[in-house]
Length: 216
Image (cartoon, rainbow, N blue to C red; front, side, top):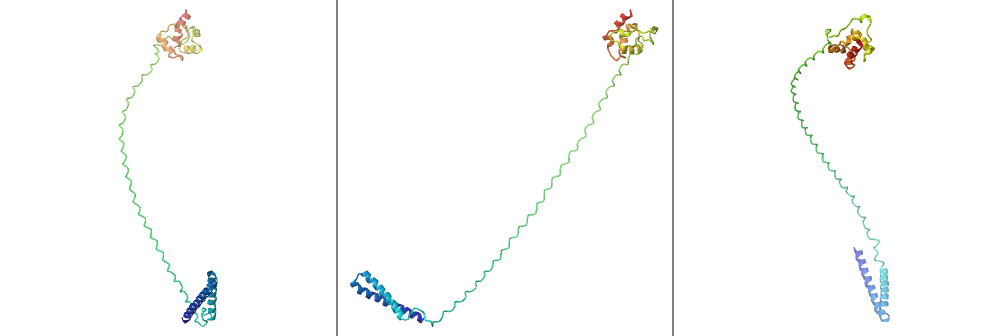
């Protein structure tokens, strides 16, 4: 502490002497030269006086070697590790809501029982068709022969519309002569026509008239 006070006193003394030297030089030189030059010379003289006084006083600005060395600064306390904040536990997931029970499907209404259809009325049986009239009995048949008269038959092919086939059929029916055909009436024509393959030939070709001409 004493060294600090001494240094302060010496420094003040040096500044006082330097300022005094500056003023003396300034006032002395002011009469002989311009004031600016006097100021410059005063500053130079003051600085030299300040340095010389410091040198003569033995460099009191420098601290004495015998002064107690400053104690080493205490080591900085080790930084205290901040406690790590524990992670907050994650909130538990909310439990999933229980599934709602499915609504029971309504039972299908029973299908209506089909009413039995009334039995179809039995259609009246069709009256039996009248049996086709049988060909004229033998009583309605024309005159027929078991064979040609005198053993010789007429050439029935001479009648228009009668061919070999019809002639053979007529002979099988017992008709061999023009005279037999010339004598036919309506019932006779119907009886013969019912037994021929070609119906209506007798009337269409007028066999009766032709036979009458052949029989003369």
